[in-house]
Image 1 (cartoon, rainbow, N blue to C red):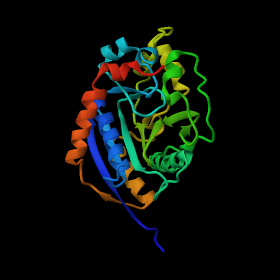
Image 2 (image 1 turned 30 degrees about the vertical axis):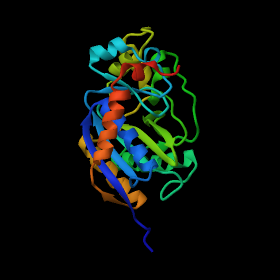
Image 3 (image 1 turned 90 degrees about the horizontal axis):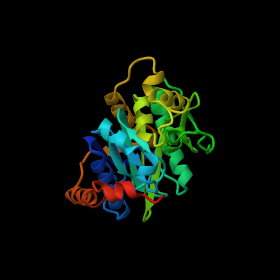
Image 4 (image 1 turned 135 degrees about the vertical axis):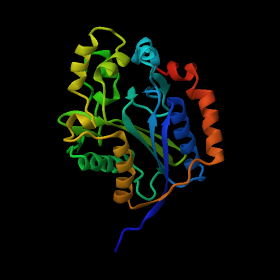
Length: 280
């Protein structure tokens, strides 16, 4: 007997600013938590490139704000935890769904596992034999940039290849629903990543990039053929649908969701006091 199919919303947002992306994710989490929406997979990208901070991070302590300005990077704090991430030539996803229903067990780690298995298959479909991280491993970096970067610290049910972390992710739970968003880097400029996260200025960008190279992976680093961001953005929802038995409702954001996202953007994600203060 065929597995039962579930209807989800698929929202393909294209390129948006960091403030817009984070506001939309939170607005959609609220909609699902309040029972106003089906579960959602959102696929999006970033323009300009953006450094996102974990909810508890303080911007001046974990990113080089002057370097970010010189590079033209936005800096935005997420509503989820974790470490700093540079979003540039990548595909980003957000999964928003009720906890303990349909595809997802109630346990936090198990919901990570379900999504990680789909992402693993995305990488494998492009010829990169990604593996799930078997246990939480403390970041071993010695520089501020290594310790700040999400991609240097693989956690349980995250993806590794040749010892390098391939995809970062973070979760937030709200009133019986969860948001998990994460990144699939297609290309990555390690010198710029180091510059953005180097608060100590101990190393040159070239030397810093050399350190990060032992921790951080991206798709085109190991793929046999050059992969485009567009190809990954197409493959990702296709494999979500295949692996989780999903049927897509491609209705875009509702008027209420758009309005709430604009409100969140104006009150939080476009405001330096929110983005840079943090908790630590």
